[in-house]
Image (cartoon, rainbow, N blue to C red):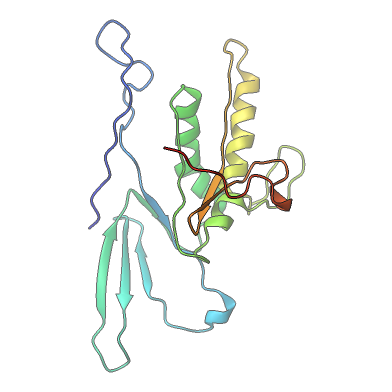
Length: 195
């Protein structure tokens, strides 16, 4: 079982000792995992990952050969998504609560971690096929968040929103700005990191 990460949120009081911006909000980092579907090159290999959605457990099977005993390792998360999970469900369970808190003024971060080929780009950045403000079933979390953010702010006539967004990629100890206007041709690559 993995320990659940804890975080603190800056405290803003309303004079009555409570924080109206985050009252009732779970003040810790939430961790989700998504299992990617098998790749074509993996053929008919036996799956090594089992997902129990009801208990939010992922079981990894370490096989040391056909004749050796199998060893299972279990990990518990705040939410688990099996390989067949549609992008829309990921958005509803991860993105919408995140977006709701951001619209209340709470800073938020979605952090994708995994080895190369594990599905981070698909989960976050898959463009899908778009027609105006509509998204396809394959559209990733980042696109859905941006569309949702601006759809919500446009509907709110009473508030003023200042939106700041960053999308960074850290790979092989190099930080790249994914939103740099010239990213595809090298702009915003290998950013200097300062203390």
